Image (cartoon, rainbow, N blue to C red; front, side, top):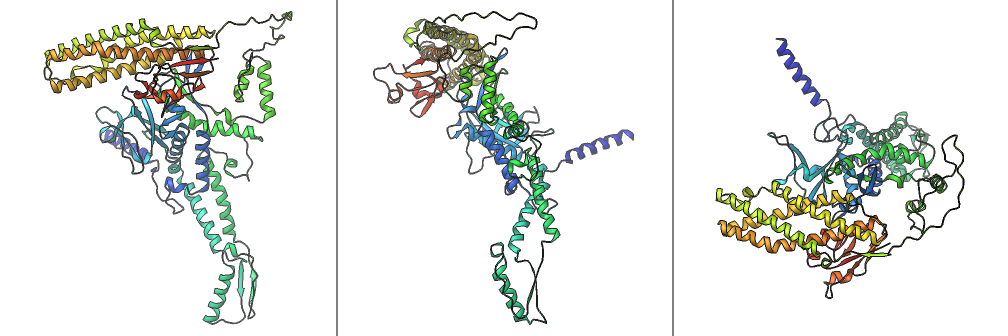
Length: 640
């Protein structure tokens, strides 16, 4: 019996635990107001808080960075970086994307973005989806999390999954604060009582002004009025004085009528105070200081200056939301040492005198150079501005002061002012090496497929080709070749510009690129094999198909890979050597019109070229699309 009682007690506690939280959908409140997230936006305090947080969050610059030992370096070359920092998809800038994500998180506690992927499996676009169109589900057998997406009529996203069942890796789920479960808690749903009171207060005050018959008071007459006289006096008074826009008009009395002025009722006066208090409570729901949404009656303990108040807002109000978005976005980057970060420095800048005083101390004590300071002020670098000062009196306690020595004149460093990326004709050995390695891989892959086909003549292409194993083998081959090309080209470019090249800093990018290329190649092979099976699955015919791939396709792939890697390596070498701009150069005597238009285009080293309707970092950048890459012989010129 005690065991049975414990069983029922445990079930009862679980049931009470599940029902202890209020539902996050709209429901009635103590103020007899039904509150939904969308209706809550009609409350000025709610709209002000959500607008403030979403707009200030979206205006911050974003960047992708990589940990290299104790250093943190920008990683703009990561394939996902443009989506997070520049353009989420062709129809939406990154700033507007983050504004929508923050808005949904603040309104419903959850936000979703569909991850569009290229043929190679790399993210190619981020498409925000209204959370009302998303339903999280668990696969009972495996516990895998999937999302059922049912787009509304005014939404669009390139969802390829059948039935709208999207796997977790293809949907970014941004959650607000929660205490378990798949979904975050909706701030509006959890605090709907305060929001409902605010909505009711707003409606009451609006009705109060509509009903107000100023000058407020009582009209009394001697004797008794008949119905006609009563209606005439009432109608005349309402026509002349009822409504806030008719207040304080001249009151004309007749028939001995007398006006007695009255004051605001205690209930109405107290309700106005309730309205003001509700604004403060709603600001507290979103963690926003009341003075930032117009409630300036109460003093703030966040500091007396604008800088102190802005600092408090960024740390305690905005940063928790930004951190949640950063952690969710990291699942796209594929490397624990690569991360995305919002930069709130623009919101923390003090007045000019304070800012320049801080720069002076940083310069004096040797932890910032002139060019670093100028960069923070969006000013161009100057000659010799990369040097750091070292105070002469900074010596260990008890040591004699160092003797001052006359500074020796700096020897000019011999280096070129420009460097060019190599052409394909300058790298014949690497093209040949790529061709041989890829051809050998295709030949061995063909032997494996034919051997499997002899054992299982009725098997499909998907069953015969083990893509996971094939991708792993081809990735290792491509990565080894890529490291060699990039190391050689990067070192040569950096040396031309008078710098040095650390090839290991590019390893993570090369690994990701090799994996994506391998997946793309094998996916194409599987499709071609499936098509071959529709014609003939005879082992001899299949072997002939792989023979054609070994000769022709491997050569095309070799040239494309060397073209891409040489441009990437030259770009990295120039960046590490201190190049600041790059120029698109056309070498083909008969170039395509889009490339001819791009000839001579100069942009910052970390910026994109515009080629036709696409943008890319260098010739043969996959971001330019197949039509702009095929047959391209363009090169880059790097400028110090």
